[in-house]
Image (cartoon, rainbow, N blue to C red; front, side, top):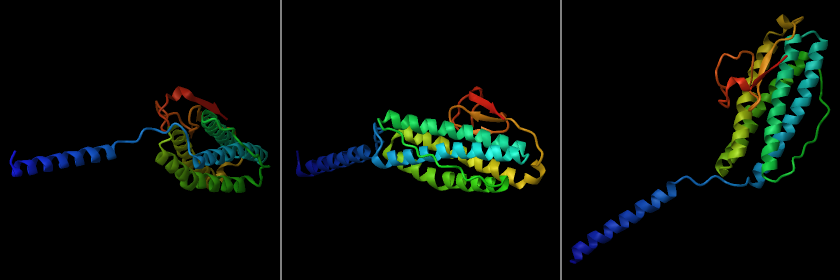
Length: 215
């Protein structure tokens, strides 16, 4: 082989090797089998938050009933059922990873229904705008699928909770003396709605038959 031909062959081999290396570098990493210590902490924090939200919303519902805001009481009960599902989902991921779930329940701070709605809106906005996006981003970077799924489903639901609470607060005067109202909660992801005008859950894509009424 001439020197020119050899040089061309070497250049082709080098180029091919570079393509192979680039291709290998861009291949998606395999999903992780175990969460990192940080994601475990995030799951524990999310679980603790959901268990306390469940208790808090039940207390808020009782207060709304006492103040004759029946529809608002129904909304709080539906949200409480949703938060219980989120807690169960987070807990299941921790147990799957061989981690013991830890929860510290606090006594709910119950004020007037208007103030309770404001507190609920603040909490939900923090969860879907700050907490869950941070937790989700970390789980995605680690490619730990169970945490990614449970954080994503909770995030979508908390955003809807905030919207429902904001609507209730805006119309609170008209809701005085209202009777109970039926809401629907997805048994898979906890998504909460007042109308089942879809065939599959807009949050987790499960059939709407997975929804249960709560009033």
